[in-house]
Length: 144
Image 1 (cartoon, rainbow, N blue to C red):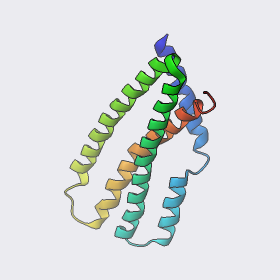
Image 2: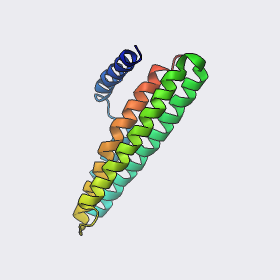
Image 3: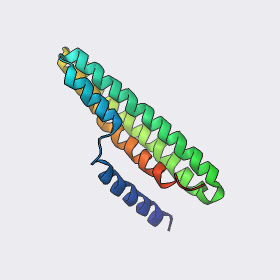
Image 4: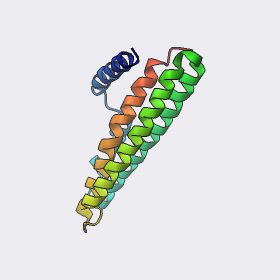
């Protein structure tokens, strides 16, 4: 039964993420605005780096808020809170492994042309998790 509930929640989160894709996230808006006025690899890399930092902060903020919300809901959400904590720990291991792959592939290559791919690959790992956490948090925003 626990797994059925997790599958149902995951389905809802993914459906919400699909709808959320229609709106441009504020982080993406800032990135797009920065890229629109910036030329050259290094200045553009700074735009991407700022976005990567914002996605990382969004993950931390949403995760902390979600755990706080589930804690406030009490015993009814204790199992879900534990599951989310385990999922986050597993995701962090995945993230770290992916970042190592990116470093192994691009970290030692010379030239500014390799900086942007290293950063955008990091964004590609973090952005979906940030959106997942935002969507999960929104499921509990009206509960107290």
